[in-house]
Image (cartoon, rainbow, N blue to C red):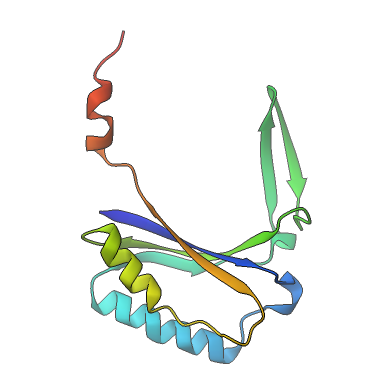
Length: 127
């Protein structure tokens, strides 16, 4: 099964949580473990929302909101795409992710399975 693991952080000031050399080194070690286990397909850290944009679809209209996204309580800091045998395996790998208990932030790794062809088998052909 393929899953996306989204790294969410709340209580953080994006301008103050730029990755440190230590954080990058810890994540490189963790990523290397994932690669050696054949789990990691892709992954990366995301720059602050001040360098991003949101495309909003609402009521038939489309608008673009430039970052930073001040109304967001959570920041998406990064992601991985993993190939695992089960959700339980993904959760076990996520539990091994390095985290700084002194950061003062709440960090959440959200594990979301991808849809697979079998998930749509019951839809059949309509028409």
